[in-house]
Length: 373
Image (cartoon, rainbow, N blue to C red; front, side):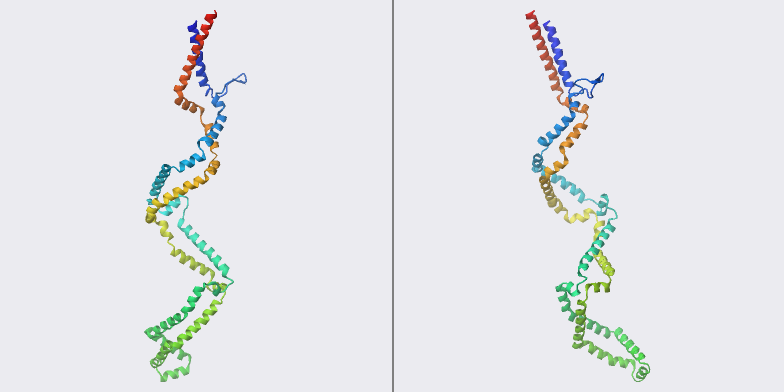
């Protein structure tokens, strides 16, 4: 009797513990009988899955994936070195790319880059033109131009006069100039009518040229002529300085000015060359500096940036919510397989322990019955 009661107690203890372990996960769905849900269905974990998900989410945020823990990880030398090596490796691959700048931009959905860059430059030029000229239209040219530029122009007027006279002398001393002088004399005499014809009867063209040409050269080389020209240019320049900027713009034409600026500035900018150049060729002069200097500094700046904002980032990420949703979406069957694969031996020991305790209790009960009986 004692032996049988020990066997029965062991079976009851072992089976009870085994069922208790199974009831952690099974059944997966509630079972109904005559419209009533049977107790202990579904299993503990399926039934309390939502509470478990919420609790795990809070546990992860409060004790596992904390801002302080992430901050310590960010500043670990090994982690920083690993990030630098990874960044240098990725940057090296990019800097060795044979793709052109246009092709790289097209990967980001930016097409027809050359025309878009040109349009942006021209729009910028037009906006800046309106910004600068719009403020100056009511002012005079003398008030608008820099004082240093005005002084430089004033000081260059005598040299400009000398330059004009020098070019005039060189021209009239050339064969082309002498021929031009001949044509001018001929036109002058033709306009005199009969008087011109009478002069030509007494004096030939060559004689007239030989008489006028030296006098013309004396006039052009005379210091007084240079002073006179300088004075004339200076007087005209003073009048121009008093012009409103709007008048200058009107005389030249706004569209002509803008077109001139667009053409000359866009032609001077080598953006077409940059866009058609490969990343490798374009960055070759800076590759070592980028990899050895800029990358480590960028990594440090990124670490510091995350460090300063880690709390806000975690708050906006809603980590606890992510964990909750993941746990709720995780199949209980897979969770059961994972838990059992890790703790199968321990669960078996719990079952055996239940059988052992049940057996011992059965033996004790048998002894008590035997003694009482």
